[in-house]
Every structure is written in C-alpha cells, then in structure tokens.
Length: 251
Image (cartoon, rainbow, N blue to C red; front, side, top):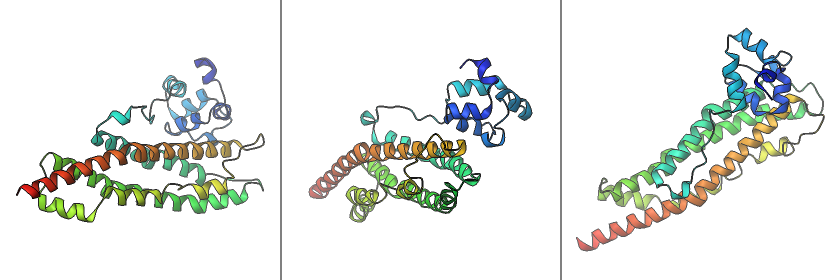
C-alpha cells in the first residue's frame, strides 16, 4: 500500500489488513478501537502527530523488534544480556499492550462473553506470575552464572564460591525452569487455541493474534535458554568446579 493510500485508509481497515499495525498505533497513543472509522490522516491531525512518521513506522516497524542473532556463537554474558532485554520487552511493552486490549475488550456477543470474563480474570494473574518468574530467574540463575564468570577470572572469594556451589547447581535451575514451560496453557484453553473465523470481531482478531505472537516469543525464548544458555552454563560450572578442586588439591 502506498504512503498516500495509508494516509487515507480508515484505522479499522489498516488493522484488519495487518494486526501489527494496531501495536504500532498504540505506541503513538492511538487506540485503534477508539478511532476505527477515521482515516490515519484524520487521527494524526487530531492528535498532533506527523502522519509521515507514523506511516514510516507502519511500513517498517523498527521499535521493539527482536534481533535475529547467531546466539550459539556468543559468550554467555552476552546471551544473558539478550535474554534480559527480551524480559524488558515482555514486561514493559508487550504485556501492558495485551493487558490494555483485554481491559478494553467489550464482547457484545454471546460467543465471546465467557472469553471476556475469563481473560479479564486470568490474564492479570498470568502477568503477575510471569513477572515474578522472570525476576526470580534474573536474581538467582543469571546472577549465579555471572558469579561463575567472575570466579573464572579470579574475581570471587574461594570460600564464597565453595558455599555457592554447594547451594546451587545449573541442573537444579534447569529442573525448576521446566515447570514454567507451558505458562499459557490456560489462555489457550479460554481462547480455543486463538480460534479466528470470518465472523470474529476485529478487537478479538487483534487480541488473539497478539496472544499467539507472545506465546511464540516465549517458545523462542525458552528454546534459547534450554538449547544455548543451559549447555553453556553447565560447561562453565564444570570448568569452575574443576579449577576449584585443582586449587584445593595443590594447597
């Protein structure tokens, strides 16, 4: 669609053509469900936005895009930084956006009344549990790995290291991590696996697509942790233990 065509397209049509447009508009302060019958140009004039800037972002959204990086070849500290950045995007951007979609969801249709009720009840609980989980992960597992990294460079007390290795293990963190592998099972059940038909209202289409995309991001995130971070962390832990045992042997 050309720039001129985008400017003169109604918001509802823009979003119906591509649900990601709703996300882009949201971060310009435009709630698609509040301006559905206006054109993009009309909304931008109302809100004092430069339509050219909004069009550029709609054509090629750059903000909040996760980089496609060869993480398997990265050192472990950079992998942790990448995962922490993903956590930031989840907590500060994606989840607040989905929460707003759910808060503003008015079923007005008997097929979706139960969905509205259940999502408004379950999603805040999911968010609370999810945020607690990732902060725990950063405060315990990520910190443990960073401590192992420092000890390899000789920047950690041997006595503290001994107690740390006695108390923690990568294997234990891996087992705990597995219990969180299907966090969105309940939401899938409520939405019947994000089922969309030709009769599905636009708001539901956007919401279900966002939930589905978020779940896909979580699966990718978990795969990076399981297939890249944990093996590297286990190798690092083994290296630290061997160095520690060798040091004890020679003392």
